[in-house]
Length: 151
Image (tube, rainbow, N blue to C red; front, top):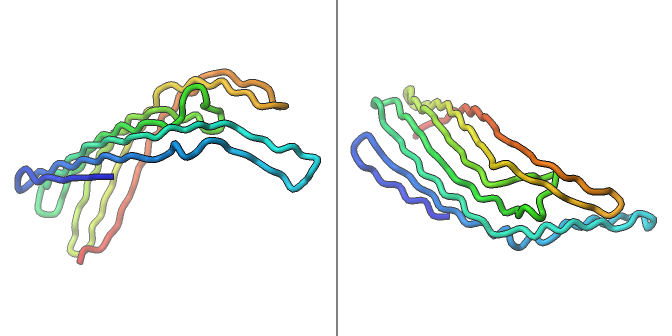
């Protein structure tokens, strides 16, 4: 990861982040059971390395209040051919807003983010379990609350 920040004025800063994750090391999920009558199950994953790129801004509204916003593009390591129902992840866009307010040595923050994933086609077959074919649509709303002490 690399994440530079630049103060553009007394009130405005921009931040960026670039993260590379080495998911390509994950080739398969294999389950081996102690019970010899239960056959070993193996699911090919063949994950790919991925990137996450984000850009944000922080605006010092008053001496005690900061507004924050950001956007991120997060690449999924899962290829269409290997996507499964238990992990139907795909590339996602994340938008976030927040406010941080200081009261003396306390810092109180509230944030909201929305994540939207591209539709995720799934077609997976497991020996003895059959074939699943379909498409997943995913999005998420998150609210965060922070309390901190400033030294």
